[in-house]
Length: 237
Length: 339
Image 1: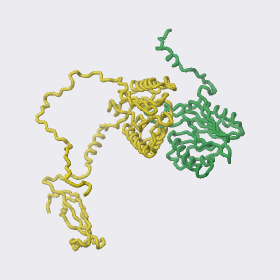
Image 2 (image 1 turned 60 degrees about the vertical axis):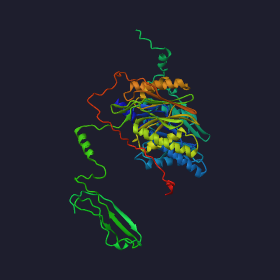
Image 3 (image 1 turned 90 degrees about the horizontal axis):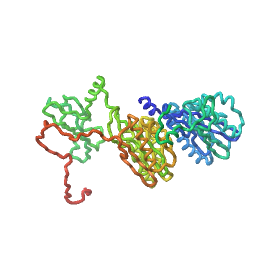
Image 4 (image 1 turned 90 degrees about the vertical axis):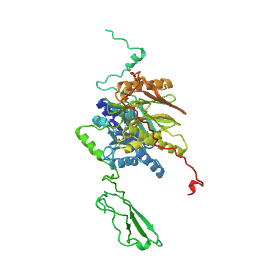
């Protein structure tokens, strides 16, 4: 009982796999949907891709509380900045605001973030802001506990100048591979595509993902048997 | 100079005299330090003045002596920390001090077709002891918003009361019904500011102009928005019920039954939860707080004789002194405020 109690009192963290990828014309952000407290899955359908502005989104990993609060603060600052500037904020500004909060509070925060968006000056851009508060502009970025299983995969599969569909397939494949191997990642795959036309959100339920080595095909829950009959039938040998 | 005077903290009052006062010629001398705690120094009412101040001000210092008592024990003012020494000594000997009251708890919430249903058990524990068999864990936040609390009982009470007051002030300020996301943001910022030390895990639910909402809030300040949620030590048992039987578009009765079933699962399978089931149904424009909706744990053995006290305690005299006397106020004439 005690170990379960300890788990339920653990800080809410997101094991996570988060990915941000640029393609020819925009960016695609992808994430899993598992939030855990210790060994218990607190939310199996969480949305880790949060909106900062109309054209900039943020993938969150690490402590759920820290990343939610950082994203709330930056959304507020970006809103003010947009009003003062008179035009949509650039991805670079958004990423730098994230970086300032992360770096200046590095001792107290535990949040690994990936900022991605599209603006008219630079097009689609991905910025990684990992734990210490560095800011790195990259053609693709991966983060979270599940990302360790994807470094080799991306080294091989990444190509410059992909189309939108190729890039989205890559992101979904990568997240599903990470979900297969990382215990702290799971649930569904959510993707957000940001380009000059706007923002598209997609949702891939867990049982529609491709199967990997030794994975069994999904089955309907055996609870259906129990609920269909009034009482469970006695075992017959 | 009496020996019988004990340590006397005393008051010094300073009176400012204008220049025209007849006492003015008495201003002289230096400002003397008259505070002391020594039992041997006797202080008579004295006149003390200061010449360090501008000439048009006379500071008249008068010190009052506490009445000496016959015996030597004039009690010291301030707090007495003698019992702290006793507690330390007992702790060293191995006595465990009572722990703070936690609500072991199973709390749940779900969204049904017309609104939100919240449910909670009613056991409050203090370590292994049940401190309260029928406590209320569904707290009022606003007429259209209620919040279930798990964790330290004091923390959940305090934080929900605090945010409920803030919401009321906000309602006066805006002239509108409170929204669930307002309560959510207030609670989450409060809890994040205290970095998890305010041990309150909450299930917040309500119906506002934008529709029904259900959120969970963790002690560190993170939140989740879900169609059905459970928190507390019994959350695993309750979530098992929800995961197998929840579907979208439940009717009110189905929803209440499901919530009751989930709480019962927590009550019977979790040691930290028990006693009765409280349910709260919130719909657009109305709410129903079903206190003790189900009482599956009645007291089984009740002595038919009732309680009797042994005859050894014989009543000799009964004297009842009320602590508050009802006093009659008579207006002598004129308005009391005119003074």
